[in-house]
Length: 143
Picture 1: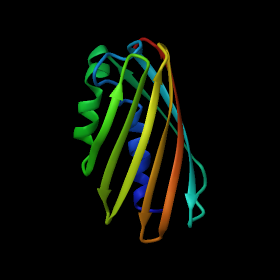
Picture 2: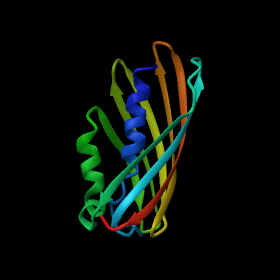
Picture 3: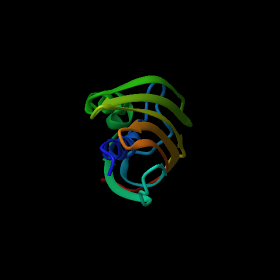
């Protein structure tokens, strides 16, 4: 497996919590389940990756999630980000393991649901890789 793929998968799951910048998103605090499917295009045959995790999001987590994500992701730089109550779009560059990954993503905030996509392009010693991920999130109830 490419050394950039695990980093991209961590970013994908973390990006589900990249929620606020200029205004509070239309999301209800509580226990959330995040599901993602990643399809990989490139010179290496990599099967689709499915990931799932649950996370308790408080009002404070939602309001402060962007700063938390940037601190947690060493080697990554947020290039551009726009957000409002309904949507967030962002671009990041991550460098590590001798490679660089360009990440474009968006999230739609739908109260007790959220959905989005993350596209990652990278060139590794083993060739170019493109990953296209879809994210579905749903509030399960109180924490």
